[in-house]
Length: 141
Length: 66
Image 1 (tube, one colour):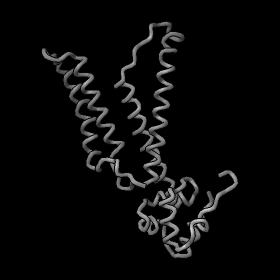
Image 2 (cartoon, helix red, strand yellow):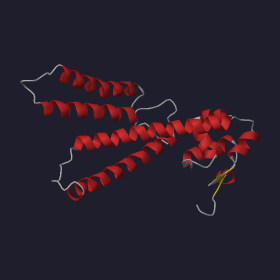
Image 3 (spheres, chains in turn cyan, orange):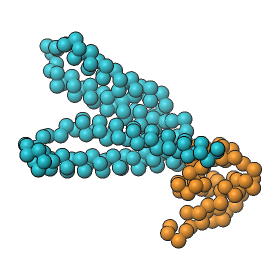
Image 4 (cartoon, chains in turn red, green):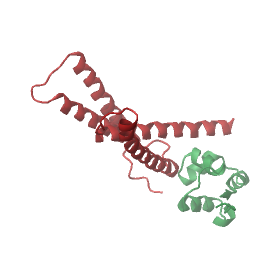
């Protein structure tokens, strides 16, 4: 099965940098009480979150040493699963605002939903890889 | 889907790693196929059958629920 759509493995390291650097920078800006005269705090926050999303995207869609058609299928299943969970969240969230919290409906940020989907994909993908390796080791011993 | 990869592998004196290397997948994938946790693509199934020099339907067999 063709898995050429994946980024080269070096993109994994780039992904980690893109995830960690905005996070650390955001903490530093908060600690140093930095205020920009050009950009608003919201603009900076959205840009940082978008960069972190790109990092998470590179982390899941870059090639692994043991990448093959089975991992490709696992990625596909997780992508479908995470989209389904995101849709369920979009249905439940306004309902819970009105029914449970008796509050106004809070608008959902696209970046937060995309980040949630990507974090979910990364966590489940690594969990599945760990389970496969564990099963293989148990089989050998 | 039932398969006889483990038996054929033993008959040809091949380890999971050897077979994985020959067909270009990971050892985990061969193990998952043998334990029926993963159904291979047609391309991979044909590659495995070619290694064992046998027809595809002798290596893989449909089960009642398939």
